Amino acid sequence: MGWAALLAVAAVLAPAAAWAPSAEEELQFKAWMLQNNRRYGPGEYPRRLRIFLGNKRQIDEHNAGNHSFQMSLNQFSDLTFAEFKKLYLWREPQNCSATKGNFLRSSGPYPDSIDWRKKGNYVTPVKNQGPCGSCWTFSTTGCLESAIAIATGKLLSLAEQQLVDCAQAFNNHGCSGGLPSQAFEYILYNKGLMGEDAYPYRAENGTCKFQPEKAVAFVKDVINITQYDENGMVEAVGKHNPVSFAFEVTGDFMHYRKGVYSNPRCEHTPDKVNHAVLAVGYGEENGTPYWIVKNSWGPLWGMDG
Ligand SMILES: *[C@@H]1O[C@H](CO)[C@@H](O)[C@H](O)[C@H]1NC(C)=O
Ligand SMILES: *[C@@H]1O[C@H](CO)[C@@H](O)[C@H](O)[C@H]1NC(C)=O
Ligand SMILES: *[C@@H]1O[C@H](CO)[C@@H](O)[C@H](O)[C@H]1NC(C)=O
Ligand SMILES: *[C@@H]1O[C@H](CO)[C@@H](O)[C@H](O)[C@H]1NC(C)=O
Image (cartoon, rainbow, N blue to C red):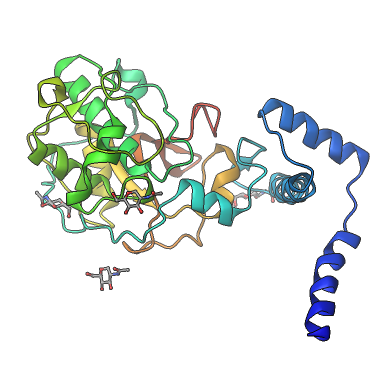
């Protein structure tokens, strides 16, 4: 009993004693708090300050090195990666199910680069999923919004919340995760998705309020690209429309600011992916091919979202 108590006290005291922020560091943190609308209780403040400074050190060290992308402070800078994961990524393991494709490669050429944002009014503004693991719904609506706009010339904003609330029968879990492939199957069999206005996003689990007469978007056919067939994905984006895909977010991605992101340590098996996004184009910089990706963490994150 005595030993346990002593050890606990030592464990609490040691890091605090070794850590003293400078006045300048505190000023930086307070400016960041103001900019990001954060307030903490007295117990929370020192912990958040410590995490913030740890993140800042990681960002500064990265930016001093020779990398293809830069990091910066952003709205996530007071979170550890473990906290970030819990709030924004899939909480339940998702086994990517669309691993066998029915995408038929054609022989025709496809462009060296494409950016659907610049080809016309085909991509809705970047949205913000908030603290809910619903990236899969934004990846899905983004893809369907663009496919409809390219086919009809009409750019609609579609309802992520309907997918959060109603798509469970297709192995989706609302704010705890899901997969775009399974969301498309839901829209196909449900016969429609409502618009953002009629079914607004709330960033939390809710009960299904789908009204068939208000459906504005429909799925005729879903095409899966085989896992690892990145050339198939290039062809699909280059010749057809933006494509939903998933990957593994690791600790550095939460601080991404600009440039060509790359991380050789990312896992790449279907059971390790934890975030779904939308490929809206691709190109090449100094011989390095890259994807242009629409994320759902708001327009202030990364390069305009
Ligand atoms: C930075 O990295 C690039 C690509 O790896 C390399 O070609 C270049 O020589 C490096 N520059 C410096 C200053 O190390
Ligand atoms: C994912 O699916 C593969 C292949 O069907 C299976 O071997 C693996 O155990 C699954 N993993 C999880 C976490 O469900
Ligand atoms: C695409 O993948 C989904 C999810 O696994 C599956 O339900 C659907 O049948 C697949 N579609 C085709 C046409 O293969
Ligand atoms: C949201 O609902 C799904 C089932 O519909 C459930 O699996 C999941 O745990 C819920 N998540 C949260 C954060 O409440």
